[in-house]
Image 1 (cartoon, rainbow, N blue to C red):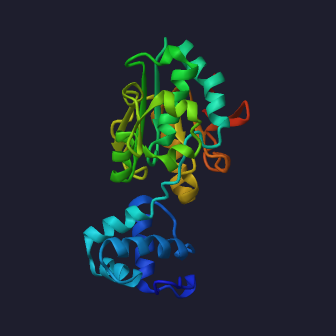
Image 2 (cartoon, rainbow, N blue to C red; image 1 turned 180 degrees about the vertical axis):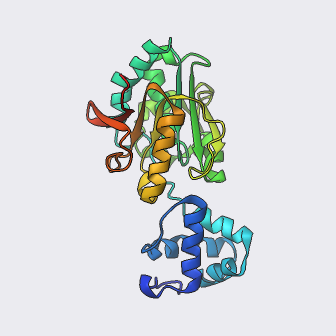
Length: 281
């Protein structure tokens, strides 16, 4: 693999195939046939590590450089997110799902936001609660447990700091002023908002230590990167080990439980689809 030309999948070098396997084992992301992604992201790794090419990065990993392997695998995580992404799910949460939870749970809410990336989704949910379901917004009433496989993304979510570019991607100006403090070139979530969000490093393919029973699980635009077997395992564990009775799962618009885990039933809420374990009301 040169710095400018991605290889044909069928003739990928042993170093490329080894890296694809490594990423699959570590974080479950499927890179077979996506050598263009390896090329583009490892170019950045090469520059940051003072190496001359992607080939040098792959060769070092193939020789057993564990530190560089950790850096390169983390570079393969997608980390694509924005405030109020797709909008409709947050409208459904504000108008239907969360008020129902507030009534059933005496104004308390536990949410797991898996694969939270840099945290925009978690803070979007926190703003939605504060502005639309005040019964859930009091101190200690809501826990938004935000996890990601990337230590860097976990740190970013915990800090709640975003650039102007990130704020401009989906966050209305009035909400930015209401819920964030501008500090130089950064916008920082206000303390009351950050108090609702707790962060943990977690690999979805491994044990989920510290995840309590939840009213809502957000796992949006994540399963599409996993094998069917990994999706089935994750969905089953959410259904049996995480969701409370009456709890629900929200996936990305292109994701579904259909054909993977028959233990769920889908329900339309506004313009969005939520997934509930069968037999719950």
